[in-house]
Amino acid sequence: MERKVIIFIMLILSGMLHAQHNSANHIWDGRLVNHPTTNMPYKGQNQIFVIHYFDAIGENGFKDMFGVYGSANIQMGLEYGFSDVFSAYFLTEKLNKTQELGIRYLLSEQNKELDNPVGLAASFSVSIDGRDEKYFGENYYFINRFFYTSQLSLTHIFNHRWEMMANATIAHFNIVPEGNFSTFLAINPSLSFKLNRKKAVFASFDFPLGLASASEENPQQPKPLVTLGMIFKTRTHNFQLFVSNGSHINPAKEYLNNQIGFNPEQFCFGFNINVKPHTN
Image 1 (tube, rainbow, N blue to C red):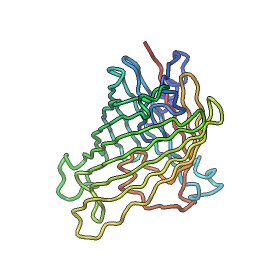
Image 2: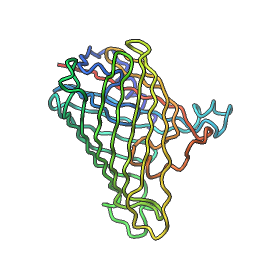
Image 3: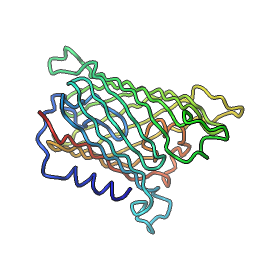
Image 4: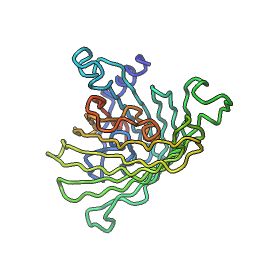
């Protein structure tokens, strides 16, 4: 896995990258941390993602530099634009060995004349949990590994400083551990403030709600997720450095597993790299 990460990052940092045109003028790119945005690759354009979550800050304290030298979760992916408004992507994640295949469609894009005051995009993905069979109950079927995520992303640029995004997410698992919800609805509001054209600070929140469960036990509602960070933007790269109380990266997995809440010791550092290495 580490060798794959090194190769992937070398690809990203290679000098073969070309300039991109970003008509939306958002400070973020195709993803804000682990959520899709309304920024789409153009027809024939690729988009590369690397998301890295370090270990919990309070797990070993100074011994592992507040999680930086500890265990990590990583997600890597590639997105391709079949047209200016339609794309497909593939993501692979380390912790749960999740393989995710999805599509995105741009419904509207905010323009300077404000004929369209908001950007709006829809996405849908099918994911496979690649862990050992023991995690899927005694009566194992391959279909148990599948879960599905639908998201609607809305963005708006208020002025040259402030912009926002709000995602609505529905996630469903074919099977979950006893005492868990299998279907979730979540709202993910985010707000960013530009320090200049290439730097910004942002705050992002997830408020998940368990909707359905086949469990005989009374399942616990998932805790909210909080992410605070900075964005550094270049013509081809979008770097995001953050601290978060998440660790599973995939939003659906976060909603299923997050019972951390706002314990500062369980927060972790992380970074996200978005790259568009080719444009027509």
